[in-house]
Each structure stands twice: as structure tokens, then as C-alpha cells.
Image (cartoon, one colour):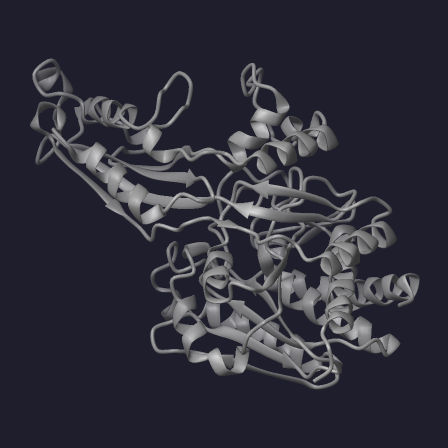
Length: 471
């Protein structure tokens, strides 16, 4: 393979075709079903998947077949299949649904407004994960441009990932014969520690979302008349959260912990040494906020192999401008626990629910409603042929060695695939690097990194073609 030629081909496709198409994709407010229950009626999800399909229809890839598949009451998926010129099957995965807008976008930026600044494309969904279908097909076409053999490739782009991929199992069953048994899974929805080299994800945390609600009255009452007699629902909510999280240290109950393997500790130390201050500085800290007196390696472990809790939403309280002197009847909090990769999320959910609902303080009405517990994932040992190919790819296209790391996020499809295909190899990577801020304001895609990752995945496809014996 001619790596410089590969880089030139990929760069031209990105500049001339992928980036302009992504700009139009960003304009579509196709929020994931969890955040937009009326997604079907609004039509934005269909607009987004049709937009992707139009690009695929016009892109020159030999042996390409594609279609939108829609099961009843399910978000559509885009399915592409490229006939192989060598043995083997690769499943390339991504998603096109998006997180909600969030507040705090910088001047001139907005969630549904594509803006290119300093080589970065800003807007919701470009990096997470709209580029996946374009990068996947461009990697295949780049091999065809040089006549390099590649395996049969199936590209599956779903529309429910940001809601926990609860639609995806139905499609996996419905499309089982068309997908077949993959030898390699490529996922382009992960993080990268920096923009200087290829990063491969070795583990993903699980996720346990749910809503905790505390009700003390049937209606609001005058805070002066009730204060001192009626307990504050917010105070009781704080008490209940304290049952699972130490408010001072942030540590969670033992039921949400697992033994950390030695390899993960060694890897975390290597990641911390590679990133240096970037491991902390990548976040937009306010004032003098800091993570505490913790070593960089331990911070990496805390983000990848330990549980954490985020209160991502509050209910029952009016906006500050509308806040009267009223003791509110209830307070609710949307809690999202991130769980260690090997912790069973269903079991963890049952334990958390029992802890939060037992013996309600002051006899208050307390409920904790779970939503789609998601168990994490650990990659199997990487095959030598894949390791060698990705190492060469990173050096050829980034100019630096490949690195591996666990990540703090969740990609439900990886666990699903690992259970279904225990012998499959994984190449899980992405463009979500420092300050790219997926899910938050000012999300961006670093265009150069997108090009490099695309080229690196072409190496992985070619390596499988060499590895698989002819029938």
C-alpha cells in the first residue's frame, strides 16, 4: 500500500465531499428519541438518514449496495454492503442521532449551525458520530483506488445510540443474515487522548441512568407557613444521594466497585504519562476548580475503571426568575451512574434502587425509576496482525505510535457485539479528543484527525484481507 497516496486520496474526499455534507447534516436537529419523543412526527430523523443516503448514493465505491431499513416504531438504520475482493467480513459501525442542544455555546457558534474555525468543524453531531458513514466508505474506496484487496464490508449506522441503542437489538436480529459473522468490528464513535496519534479503546464503562423523585406535599405551600414543619424535598433528596455517593470524596458505595486488573493499571499509567497535563487541562475548568490531590494515573483509572455519578437534570424547581417564596411539593433529579466495564448494570441498578427507596426519610414518597441499564465492555486481546497494521497506520498517517486506553463513556453496541460474536476483533477509535465536548456546548470535529483516522482504518481492512486464508 502506498500510504502517501492513501493520505492524499482521503484528504481530497474529506475536503471536497465529506466536510460539506457534514455541514448540512449538522443543520438537522434530529435529537435522539430519549430527548425528542415526537421524533417520528417531526421527521428530522428521517431527514438525517435520507441525507446520509444521498451522499452514499453518489459516492463511487465498487460493489456498493445500500438501503434504509425501518422496523415498525423504530428509528431507521442505514445499511451499506460493499462486496469484498478478499475473504473475511468487517462490520463498521456508527450512529446519526444527536444529543440535545445544551447551553453555553460561544459567540458565533450554535448546535445546528456548522462553523469551521482553525481546522475544526463546530456543531452538534459532526464528531459524535455523523462522520462515521463517510469515513467508513472513504476508507474502503481508498483501498480500491490502489487496487488493494479488502474484505466484504458491512456499514451499519443506527439512530438510537444516544438513547442507549434500545432499537438496535431488533435490527441485529432482523439483519442477522445480511450482516453475517464479522471477523473485525470497526467503531468510529470513541475518544482520542490527543490529536497526535491513533488511539484505540480497550474498555468502555457501563451506564445506569434513572430519575430519583422525592415528594413531600401534594401542592406547594407558603415557605414561611410550612418552613420548620414540612421537610424540604431538596434536603431529603440530598440525604438519599448521600446513601450512594460521598459528597466530600465523590466515592460511591462498594456495590458499584470491581477489582481493577493489573493491565488496566499499567495502561492508565502509560496514558497519563503520554498525555501529561492534558489529562486534566482538556476540560474547561471554572475559576480555581481542580480534581483534587490525585495522581494522573489514578485520575485516568477513576475515569475508566471506577464508578462516578453525575446529576444531569433537576425537576420540580422553577427558573430563578420565577422562584416565589414557596416550599415546593417535590424535587426530582436525573442521575447517571457510570459503571466499571465488568460490572453487571442490571444487578447494579437493582442495588441502587433498593438503597434509594428503602426507609424514606420523614416518610416521604420516594421513587427511583431506572432507564435502560447498560453494561460496559472490555475488548478481547488484539490479534498480532491487527496490532501491527494499526501501529504502522498510526506512524504513517499521524507520525507517532498508536496508543491504547480505556474510556469513560458507553457504546452499547460494543457489548452487544462482544456477546454475540465472541471471536471477533475490534478496532474502536474516534475523533473525540481534548475540548471536542461531545454532548456539551461547542462540540467540534478536528478535520485533520478525521482524515487520519479514516486512513488508519483502511490499513485495518487491508490487514484482514491479508490475514484471512482464501477458501
